[in-house]
Amino acid sequence: MEPKARYDNYRLVRVTLKTDDHVKLFQELEAESDSYTFYGHARKVGQDLTIMVAAHKIYELQDLIERYDFECKTLESNIQKLIDDEALTIKSKDTPASEFDWDHYFHLETIFKWIDKQIAENDFVEGFQIGSTYEGLPIRGLKISKKSGNTGIFIDACIHAREWIAPAVATYLIDQLIHSKDPEVVDLAENFDWYFVPVLNADGYKYTFEKDRLWRKNTKPYGRCKGVDLNRNFDVDFGGIGASMDKASYDFCGSNAFSEPEALAVKNFLDENAKKCNIKTYYTLHSFSQLYMSPFGWSAEPVKNHKDLKKIGEKAIEAIEKTHRRTYKTGSAIETIYPSSGSSRDYVYTNYDIPIVFTIELRGPPDTPTLFILPAREIKPTCEEILNSFIAALNEARRLGYYKCN
Image (cartoon, rainbow, N blue to C red; front, top):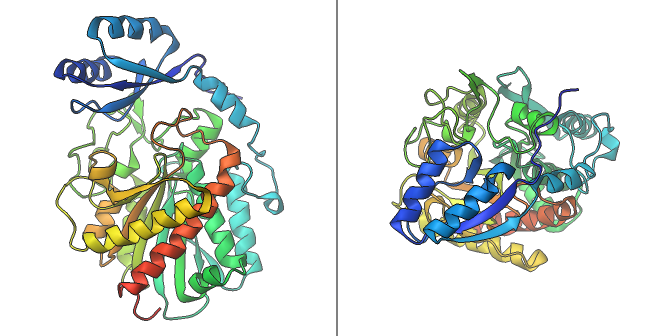
């Protein structure tokens, strides 16, 4: 078996950019060195920036701190330990679907077996495929429909490969909509049609289990580099703010809009089904930062129903806090996290008659020392709070008149 990427003594730090010189320093550092992995770009004075520093660059960073006098807080001193601890909570690839739960992380193969089990055991559940990945894996979906004439809700997860909590939440939502006896969940299951794609970036997800836990992109080669940030590959301000044309960058947007089969599959599915299936709501599940984000990421101009989306988001985050006391923020993406262009969220809102559109950035908080490596003990509480957020959000959207037939 090929060795996996290792991050022994790689350090996660958070720096505060207090001057223009600090901003320029970290812009140059990101452009010139691949030993610093940036989670966000240096943009402005006052910004907090999270960076993973390779072990052999730690003393260089300390020298820069002394010479440039910026604040630097160590969040985690050894990233590899987080990965090793998490590995103990991963079930093996041959785990049967009957042992699927929300206390462990699972390989793609087991998720697919679990999807097959739900389809086989429930006559109101059916499978579908929206396309294939670059490596030829199916991009699988699951539909839950208990009666005709329902409004549709489309949910995808794991457009970014390393965000393992996203497929876990998607499968939990599926499980609850199928099996829960809670009247509020039953209400959602009976009065909406649900379309789930639990692992949109299937190639990348497999890659994170087998080769590099922190891989973000898909796996399509671009010269000596590999992968595109699929959430920069949609045709909305393509290649604009918060996206990169640098093939080595973590947010490389691709050669052109919809150059990647995974992003194109979402477009094709919605082109064919958004109107036909009366899809009025779109969610895309990500991690981390605990945010409930509406469009846009590329523009500060409010969308036409931004006041309603704010109300819906506020109800959702209230429900989250009541569940396990976790605090989320809501608002447009550009005001809550950072500028980004070419996202699925903004494309869906702009190009279809789908008025309720959110990106959820799941646990942990913005300053989490675990990055995307959410401890398995947090899977179930994350799932529970997000289910409650759906109940609250969809009920508020109903109250505002978005689902008149529901």
